[in-house]
Every structure is written in structure tokens, then in C-alpha cells.
Length: 513
Image (tube, rainbow, N blue to C red; front, side, top):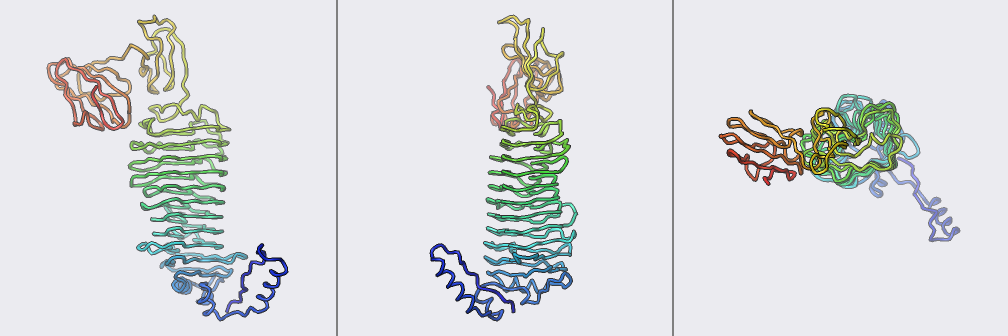
């Protein structure tokens, strides 16, 4: 039998103080503890020690805790202070709406899983359950358990004053897996010592919010391995010694409404990433926002936003970085994307970032090398083509230009090439091809002069608004093919001798104008 006291709010402002005190005194004086079974039936609280649980860090509590959770379907299992060891591979199952596990708020209540396959399941994965809570409790995996808390088809799971730590160091091990879960809510959630803090899987993931969180010594704080979510927010939190805050590594298409980091301190790790995009067949995000955040990336040599592994072709991906203090020794770009990334599908809005040189945050169009570069204005005599190298977006002003005849302004279209200058005005680059050829950014006008040549346009999705002109002067027809997207609704086009066409991308397909 557990001796408990009736909870009374003796600070009720609606009653005068003498009346409040009299009520409290009478209740305390008249309280008689009930037998455990009757108390459980009246209050919905099921005390684990009443089912044989022993918190001595020695006794195996597999059967006792499983029985308590089965009995408490719709109620709360209470664990007094102690360390409750669970040693078997069979996972504990918490199911039923409003079923919760509550620890002692005044002392240490720990459930320690020691088997690699053990852990706690919230929900059976078949039927949706609602309003499940973990409160005032520590859950550990003894460095062996691969997934400590697995939530399956849970709507509105709630963590309050909960610490989960010590999963296996095996790649992919995590502290919380949320599969087909919605409205994840957490106050004072501490996650520590694991490859992954929270792994989000499945296709149903509405709003999730973590407030006053503490993430420590994790490979990734949150990994999205499913189809994304409508909104995921970490705010007013502390992140320390974690390699990445948000990571996207999925085998299915990923879509976000909002992904937010707000009022967070990120500390003490070299090569820190706020966002890393590792794998996804397609990816779009209405708003990825990092704001009011302090980042100490130590001697980082990697970008804080790293999307180099995936070429975003579905998009758009919109990233906002504002009111951020970054202390870092990095000399590279703070945002970096795939070498073939189309700039209009991966957009950034960077404002009021302190501690990092402005050129490392420049939101100029992407280069072919996948970084943002600061445009440079150069002056010279003669054309820059073949003689002047500069970052993409640079402008070249020709001092000896004759107005109305020679162009006076050139724009650099691609990095790592002195041949990617394009005149702003009347002049265009012309090249003749006598064998099959795939167009590049260096090309503008192509003359086809070979037998049955095929000239291939690049992927239309990568070059919205870009156009190339092709003229066929050979007696045999020239075939125009596409590396991605149709051409006037067909798979290819044909140009007879002396015919030409200008092909422009609408962002999805090619259109002849």
C-alpha cells in the first residue's frame, strides 16, 4: 500500500484565506489512505510497485511493468523513485488513449533497458492512440538498446520533464522514433548520447514542437527519414556537442511546410551543421527558418547548411537565416548546394547575420560549383572571353567599347571557366558542331553541320528561363533531344536544313519560340 495525500489547491484566489485554510485542514485531518486496488479504481493511477516492480537496479521488472501498463489502459502508471531494470528483448507496450507513465517529481525515477532489442512502445502500430504522456522520468538504454522509445500511430504524444539517453552507438540507433505520429509536444525534454535523437518516419507528421529542450552529444538531433512534416519547431532550447540539428535522409519524396530553429544556442562542436540534406528522391520546403540563434561552430570547415549530396529538382526550397550570431573559424561558404543545383529551386533569404563575413552568406545565384559567390565588378580593355577568370555573377566593363557596335558589359555565367562570359546586349557566342553534342552553360548559339546530328538540351527543370538557339546547315536533319522535359510536348524535335529554333525552359519542359 502506498500512502498518498489528497492534492488540494490551497491558493485558490476565489476563497478568502481563512476559508481556504479551514478546507485544507479538514481534508488533511480526515484523509484515510485506501487499499491500492480501490485507489487505482478511483483515481486511474496504477502504482508499479503494486504489480511487483522493484526499483533497486538489480531486479528484472519486465513482467511487472508490462502488467502495470496493461492494467492502466487509459490511466497512468506511477513509478516511485528508483531504477527499474528491464532486461528482455520483448518491448514494453503502452497503448490506449490517455495512457501515461509518471515518475516521482521529487526524485530519480529511471527505467533502464539493457537488451539491444528492448525498449518502450507507445501505440501498437495498428490503431491510432491519443494523448499519451511520459512525465518526470528518465529512460536509459545502457549504451546497448537501439531504439529506446518507439511511438507508432500516436496522436498528441507529450513529454514533460523527461530525459532519454544512452542508446547503442550502432549507426541508426535512436532515442525516439516517431512513426505516423502527429502533434508531438515536449516541455523540458533532454536527449543525450546517441547517433540520433528523434527519428521521424512515415507519411503522417503534422505539427511538432519542442520547448526548453536540451540536446547533448548526438550525431543528429532530428532525422527525417519519412516524407517530412507540416511543421517541426525547436525553440528556447540548448544544443551542445551535436553534429547536426536537422538531417534529411529519406528514400521517399520529402516535403515540409515549416522547419524552424528559434531562440536556440548551438555550442561546442567542430563542423556543426544546422541542416544537412543527405538523401531524398525529391525535396521541397515552403520555409526552413533559422532565427534568433547563437551558433558556436568551433573550427568548422563545413557549411552550416549543407545540401551538396542532393540535387533538388522538385523544389522550391526556401531557407531564411536571420538575426543569427555565428562564431566560427570556417573560411568556406556557410550555405552550399549540389554542383548542378538550379538557383531558382533553392532560395535563401539571409539577413542580419553577425560574426561571419558577408561574402560567406551572399545570396547571389548559384555557381556551377554549388556555392554562393559575391559578384565582382571588373574593368578592362577588349573582351573578357578567354582571358579573364572571375566568380560567377561577376560583371566586366569594357573600357574601349564603341557604343552601338561592341558590347560594353559582360556577365560571368559559370565558375572555373574563362569562356563563360556573356555579353549583355547584342553579341552572342556561336559554335559549330560536326558530331553529336550536349549543350552546356558555355553555349548560346549552335550551328549543326554534320550528318544526322543530335543536339541535346539539358534538364529543363534546372534552367528555368534559359534558352539556346540551334541552326542546322547540313543537308540531313538535325534531331533536338532533351535530358529532361519534353520539347513542345514531344520527346524530341527535328530541324531540316537551313531551319533554326530557339528553345526556352518553362521550368519543367522546353518550348520553341
